Structure formats: structure tokens, C-alpha cells
Length: 262
Image (cartoon, rainbow, N blue to C red; front, side, top):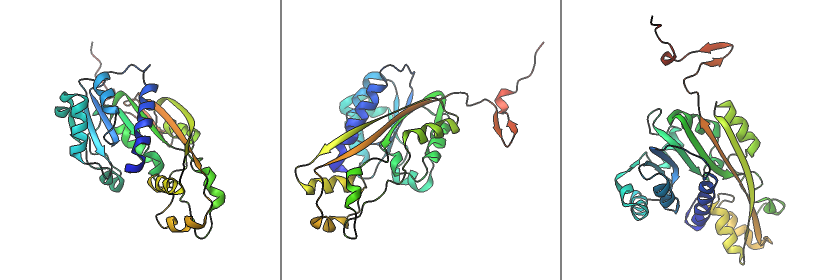
């Protein structure tokens, strides 16, 4: 997300946290990917006052901004946060700069739609989650911006979301990566606009149209609203040390092998 649409990211983070009100979780370490300066810091500070927040900040968000926001939410958070690298580093490597089994909660707000293969992201999240940890995420689904599809022509082009997974695709992927108890839901949000220039600014911020389409839009009759399909999900990292099966061969973690005592 970029600055023009930051309010949306903040609003979705708030809705994600509301959905967690009924979840009981002992949290020592939180991974926020992507991280940004928003209201979620105060909720983290209230609900998990002793947790360390590991930030993977998105482009355009400085480490100073994040630390300052954490400070105002809870001054102790200034000393209980770490930088796990910028989001650009994760995009290029596909690796989260944290050890195995190092966090209890992964909080990912509006990222998955920009990843070519969300399955690789799920694998990394399961790697860094401790046994019994939780992944919580939101992303834009394939119906986002559907009002604009009939308008496409040589002068005005839309970009498809990098990932077009719907919530059923994501639920299947969570099960395939051996997450437990996945819960998925979805809602439609409608954004209304008084001026087409504001609509185009948000479309670019949402990565739904390239900058070159700004000129082409001058001759297009744009709608006064767009629909966002927001998909929410969470799942547990349980049974990380259980035997794994691949190609009809069972692989057993060494930690499962114990010496029998008399």
C-alpha cells in the first residue's frame, strides 16, 4: 500500500484484530508483515503488553516512523521491537529474516494479493511460527475493481492482481501447508468517489492500474465507485514435529525419537 490508501490498510487491520477478540493466545513475539504506522500498535500493546514486535516494513515507511508510533501506543514497545528487514528484501529472497520457531503470531495485512506464489509465504510463516502459533492475514480477492473491467481498451488498461486466489484457494493452500483449523471469510467494501482523479489515485495505490493509464482515463467514462473484495483468514501451526509423508514415505523428526527407559 502507498500513502493515499493507508487509511484502508489501517481499517482492515482493525477489523482483523476485532475478529481475534475471541481467540486466546499467549504471545511473546509478533511478526508484522508488512508493518506500517497505524492504530494496530495500540491494540497489540493492550492485548499483548509484553510481546516483542518484529517489523518487516513496506516501502515508504521508515523505521523511525514505526518506532515513534509504537512509542505513543506503549512506551515499552520502543524497547520491545526489532527490524526483521524491509519488505523489499523479503520480496527478492522469499525468506523472512527470523529463526525457525521464533514467533507466536504472524499478522499480515493486505499483502498476499501482491505475491506471485502465496504458498511460499505460507511456508515461511509456518517455519517461523512456534508450535501452537497463529497466522492472521487479509488480502484483496479477485473481484476487486470488477466495475472497471468493461472499460478496458487500448488507452485505459487494468492490471490483474498478482495473486488471484479466492478464499477457497487460500483455505486449500493452508491445509496443503499443514496449518490446522483454517477459518476463512470475505466481505465486499465499496469506495465512492466524487472525482475521477481520486479514483485513479487509489487504483494506482492499490496496484490495479499502471501510471500510464492516467492519461488514457481522460477519455474514459469512469464509474463513481469501485468494489473491494477483502478476504480474511487465520490458521494454527500445530503438530510441527509430527511425521510428514511425501511420496508414500514417512519422515520423522529426530525430536520425536526417544530412548525407552525401564
